Image (cartoon, rainbow, N blue to C red; front, side):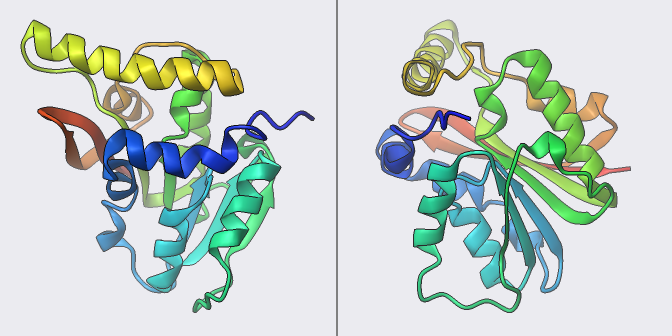
Length: 214
């Protein structure tokens, strides 16, 4: 299978840091204060995995899943000389093939769902929800919905479209508007416990959403 991230994968974290002034990294770890030692935590589409490493440093039992061999190789570079309470388990596979349902205290989909067409995005979000334990949590970090006056919304839409077009050209990701993740999470039976926003320039551009499985 062709690795869509073989070209842009090595540059992913650098581009994200420059593009967001490091706000994406902050967004990815926004809900980590809820993670306790020995919690079972899964990261879908882990990429370079600064959020997964941060969770493991808190003593969590971390599993990471990514279909990209390039991304997992970059993730492993970040693990050098690090030791954790629980070794990080790595799965090189499609998240839809993971059948460990109701197994995880936290399931993260950080800047992962936005690569898919809407129908597939909902299918994968449903899968993430199934992997969480009853009363467990699903966390989505991503671009937030455009808000404010028409000029502000236009600037936010352009900002998103630049990223959307770059990854469409480099990795064949889907082209689509910003998704309303809170709406889809509620439809899947998750209650929204907390939302934290991250500003870029003059307005909120990213958010982390903590949903609990009923």
